[in-house]
Each structure stands twice: as structure tokens, then as C-alpha cells.
Image (cartoon, rainbow, N blue to C red; front, side, top):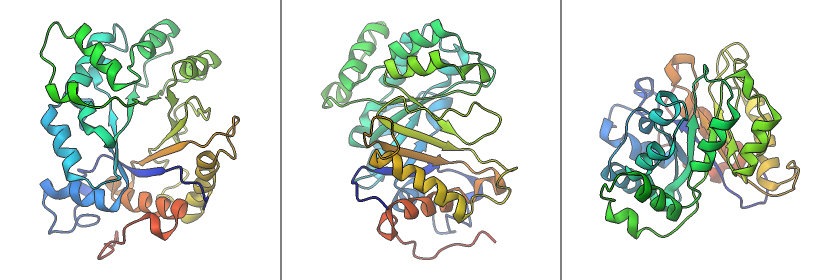
Length: 297
């Protein structure tokens, strides 16, 4: 474990998984209490529902209120931007996404994940316009909203927020993105290339921003029963190199965000895998002990 204080945030892709009932969530945890429960035992969660539809300010305020101090969310960008419009003419839809209340997560506002379809081939011009449209601060998001929402009223609470940086991560799945020009674009716009472990998608391992974003979708061919301690220990060592700067070309420490969505058993093992990796990275103090460790078997 490194002595660096640079944080590593390990969690899962979403928290409302049917397979977690009776494993991670016992029968006493009601559905409306799942976020509060999960955020006690995981340091971060990826909000996936924002991909399927725009939320309202009250949703983000509620999520923030249900989670403890020191917790961090990542937020998945709306599919209207990434799939329906395929990144084209992004300004209006990116503005609508932020106007829905995303910045109201405030101090728990982590990276925004933009995930595009596996059928979307690399188009340098379209990608560059999209990356340029992404606001890098809350102040820039407010300007983008004003310029692109046709006079729609902005929630006053967004206007009153302190300015803070907005981080972005970009996940690609088409092999044409394995291209040096794409990496250069990400670096120029300060957007992190999402690293995944699926053999079906490009294996990008380049550091393109001052943070790292990992998504473990699970590889049932390599790890049919999930991730064993040996595999997680290898990743822990790599993560430690990034957070300390030891293995970064510029030797700069980086925050690391890691999310699991294990395919086996409907993802029942995901929160336990996340907790184990957090423990390997930060030691026993890195995870809150669970009162009763449910069994997956």
C-alpha cells in the first residue's frame, strides 16, 4: 500500500441490481434504502440511470443527501448525446444533461463517463467537436446551459454552486479508436481514456488526463468465477503505481476510479470484488466492516 494520500475510489456500475438481493443487501434493506446502504460499504458508485434519461435536480440532491461525507459519484452521460446523436452537434444535448442537475452533487461530483456504441467508428472531426463541447468547470457548464437551452430557466441552485472542476472520461468500443490521433485528442482536451478489461474492445492503457478511470466489465473466459485475489493483487499494484506516480510517464500522482460490473451470477459478486480491491489498495482501514458478510453460495 502506498503512503500517498491520493485517493482511489472503488465501487460498482450502479447499485440497484436484483442479484444483490440476498447477497449484498439482506432482506431488511428496502429498495429506497439501497443507496444509503451501498454507500456505507463502497467508497464510490457509478450512476447509470442518467444514461437512460434526464433526471431532475431533486434526484441529484437526494443522492447526495443519502451518501456519507467523503463519498464520490461518477455519472454516466445521457444516451441522447452518445448513441442517438452519435456525438454530433453535441452542445445542446450536453447542456441539457448538465441543466438536469448533475452539478448539484457538488463535493460528491466525480467524473462524467461518456460511453459510445461498439458500432460507432472513429470520426476525428466529430470526436474533436464533442470533446471541445465538454465543460471543464461548473462555471463553463453554466455558460453552456445559457447558450444552448433556448431561454429555459436554470435551477437557481446550479447558479449558486461554487465553481469546481468537471472531469470527463471517454469509453470506446470500436477497434478504429486504437489510433494515436484519438489519444492526442483526449490529451489536448484533458479527457481520460477509459480502461476496460474486455478482449472484445480496444485495450487502451494510455494516461490522457490527471486521473485514471477503469471499468471491469468482466471477462468470463479469463475469469469464469470472477476475480481471484491474485488477479486483484496485480491490479492493486498497477493502481498503486498510478496513484503514487511511480509508473506514470510524467511521475505525477493520479486519482483512480474503478468500477465493477461482473457478468457472472447477474453481478452478485461485484460489490464484494470492489470491497476486496479497495482493501488491497488501502488496507483494512479502506473499507467499512460489514456487520454480517453475506455469502454468495
